[in-house]
Image (cartoon, rainbow, N blue to C red):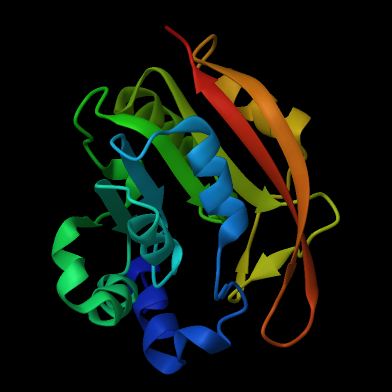
Length: 210
């Protein structure tokens, strides 16, 4: 029987410590600094594909009070909850497939996604993701989308990915939701894995129309 996506990610987080996963960052300052540039500490911020990321720890330390962490994997989120201890109650933990999730309309000022969107290799999945994001973000809100760049890896955790540059990412969102988002900033980033390999990422900041 083919493994479901949820089972796959639960297995990934269950088999190795978070510090050995290729996407591990002890101090995810690039993401935190971008969030700070577009959302105040009293804003509602959601991290898509949060898993065991330490971004939530850093945002709590910086005074963010309305944090939401969504992931398909309960096991991944449980790592973060255990690490945070009593501070875990400050966070809204959401176990869901983002492409099927029903967000509260216009609730979020900022949508952050480090390496979840690029796993959506099917056009229908991408369209569903963009529709959810468009509904979830308030008018004028921002999305920080990080994906493998065109010269980045073709696979991650045994799965194929869709690689982008800022132009192709913006075009994908425009195709899925015409007029809903505008690209307002972009940059490249090179992530150093725990195994001392370098992965090329693109980072795009999109603004919700309205």
